[in-house]
Image (cartoon, rainbow, N blue to C red):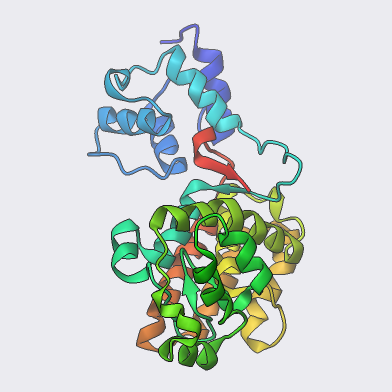
Amino acid sequence: MPTDLSPRIKAIQKIIGVAATGEYDLATIDQLVSIMQLQPDGNSMQSKKEAIQKKLGFSGTKIDNIFGVNTTTRLEFFVSSSLPDLPPGASMIVSKKGLDLIIQSEVSGEAAYNLKYKNPTWPKSDSGVTIGIGYDLGFETAAGIQGDWANFLSTADINKLKSVAGLKGLDARDALANNVGGVRSVSIPYEAAKEVFYVNSMPGYARSTKSIYPGVAVLPPDAQAALLSIVYNRGTSLSGNRRMEMKNIVALVSSEDLEGIAAEIRSMKRLWTTPDTRGLVIRREKEAVLVENASFFFNPGDIIIV
């Protein structure tokens, strides 16, 4: 039965591509579940509505399955969201989910970090000695290390890290094995690692990502985050056969071809074929999924400007 909300519901239905009935019917609820990438606790209408309200930020008794003015207002914002203007000094608008993927890929989480990553490691391949949340000393200068870590580490520890700055691959492996400059003794608290990741690393790598992928800032936040993840992991070089896919993505970003970008990310898997590089294959697949499912439907709490 039509209600005073019917015109507003019809506008939402038009945006999400279902029949404009003016009611929150099954087709509308199913489409919202799909767009929001939800996994309801069951297949009932009630379960689906609960999942939608949770996604919209309702909690506790506010999750009541009543799609009235409150839920409709939040849905209107969700389906009509456009990317905000970038403030001065910012480069990209990425999803929190995408940044969580970077952290998960680099250190798994706080418990694993404290067990395996609080001291310097060498992730193999072309990496340098790595600290914190994927902070690769092989791609940093002594001045950069000083600037990023001066507020968290002693001068003695920073000097130990500087001793392996710029070393990559086997040189980095050997430096860590031989404890060059005493680098293995440096211990970095998880909170410090997170602060450097969010405050120092992300803005810098966002600038680097934007520099090699002009137009990236108009892509959906999940897609922006996936490309930021790749640059954080692989750097900015576009030269040579091993960087072929990264170079191909330049034109795909300009044309906003999300399917093409996802395909190129999956093609990168050819580079890692040994058991000890399986983690990179998994990471590329997760980045590809982020891109191919990216949309402009989001809540303000879902995005981070870097």
